[in-house]
Length: 144
Image 1: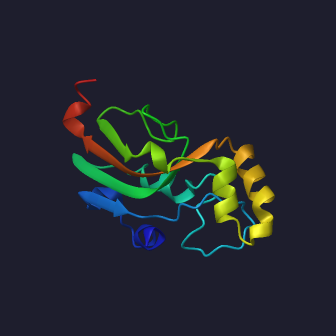
Image 2: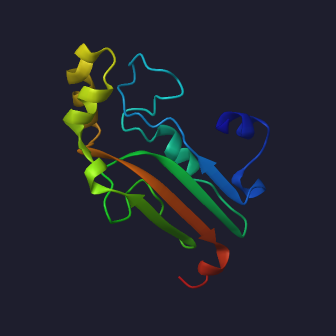
């Protein structure tokens, strides 16, 4: 869908709200997973593109998925640009260490070590299910 919007010449400027449940499974590049599941080595391949949206005056993004190394601080994959505010809703009991995550997600199951090493190579220590909400308001740009 994201590619179709870009191909049609649509941008975030054409929307007030973007809600997404993008492919988010952190998997090795050559993993045999479904296209709708595979989110790249750290699970953020599509999510990064969504959060790069540029709104004219105001806009919001809501993404649900699994996020690597999520904490109570702004993750490095989110922009700290003027006008943006973020909040992440997650429960610590849903956090999984990278090795446990790889064991549960690996396809085929015998490939768990390959999956775990892929996570380690891109710096994933743990993965958390969460809802991340981003809000842009151009009037906040002048406040910065």
